[in-house]
Image (cartoon, rainbow, N blue to C red):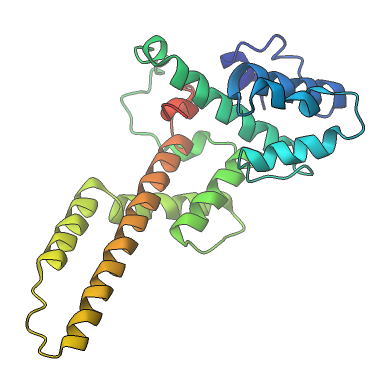
Length: 237
């Protein structure tokens, strides 16, 4: 499940990498940090680089926390896949000019037919499940045993409520709210309270807009054509 991302990162042995092999696993983590992610300063990578050490799991656990990985030490496959995705995004951010003109793989002979992108997804892969759960939490969507059902619900919500038109309409309503005159309130205390509530509402809208943008990017990544590397959507660190 890691071959495509490892290949994109020019890993020396993408086909033979075995996440369950402790030595290969530790070496891969160190390689990702040294060559691609580079979250730590060079002088701070000593504990992570000390692969034979019995304290390496603690260093790895701290590393996951420092890079804000949503998975823990026990969720090895999920954490590795997440780190690979992070590395791919950083790789793209460092080489925007190199990758921005890359063309997607040629479509099949049935490209003229509208296909459901969800059909080609592997709903049993850990990264798919983790992505769907993250989106469901952001969008406050009820959980379901079938992850494809959840993803379809997410897509419907995005299309109906988070489309460019819907966002534009929400922005217009926000402007109307900002321009609403509060002078109709005669009581000075009520007037001050109304102003505070308006400021709080504006702040909530800004936070919602940020979550909407994150959700849109994530959904676009999940339902992208699996023949393209959808993790290359984020530029910079």
